[in-house]
Image (tube, rainbow, N blue to C red):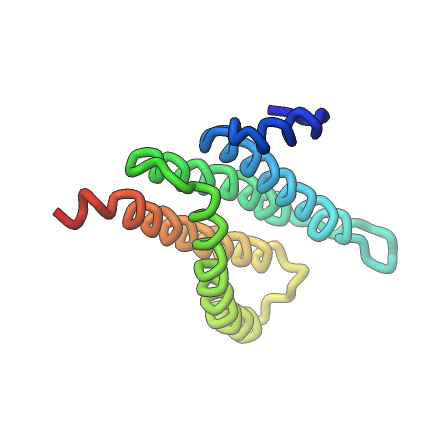
Amino acid sequence: MYFWKAELLEQDLIANAVSEQQQMKYFFVFFVVLYILYELFAVIFPYYFEDGITHHSIYDVYTSALGIISEATGFFLCYHTNRGGDNRHFVVRFITLYLPHIVQMLALAIGTGIVLVIATIIADISTEDPRFSMAVFLWIAALTLWFWYRMTRSFRRIAHADSLSV
C-alpha cells in the first residue's frame, strides 16, 4: 500500500496492477479513517456547552467506540463473506449495497427514535440523565447489528448466487 507516493499508485492503477485484495485494503483505510474523523469532529469534540464544561456520559464514549468497532468489524464480515463466495467486485458491491441499507436503517432509526423519545418523556427521563445515554447506546447497538446483518446477508446472496441457485 502506498500512503504517500501517489505517483507509484497511479502507475499501478494504469497498469491494472492493483488486486481486488489491495483495493479492499485501500477502501478499508478510507472507510475507517473517515468514520474515526467523523466521530472526533462531529460527535466527540462538539460536546461542549455554553458553560465550557464537557457533558459526557460513559455511554457516549461507548457509543463512539461501538461505531468505530462495528464499522471495522462489519466491513471485514462483508469482505470475508464476499471472499467465501465468488470473491469478486467487493468495493463496488460494498458501495452500492451500502446506500439502500443505510436508507433502510435511517427509516428504522426515525421510527424507533420517535418511540424512544416518547418513552423517555413518559418515564420523565431528561437527556442529561445517564439512563438516557444508556438507552441511546442500546438503541444504536441494535440498529448497528441490524444494519450489518442485512449487509452481510446481501453479500452472501450475491457472492454465493451460483451455489444457492443449484
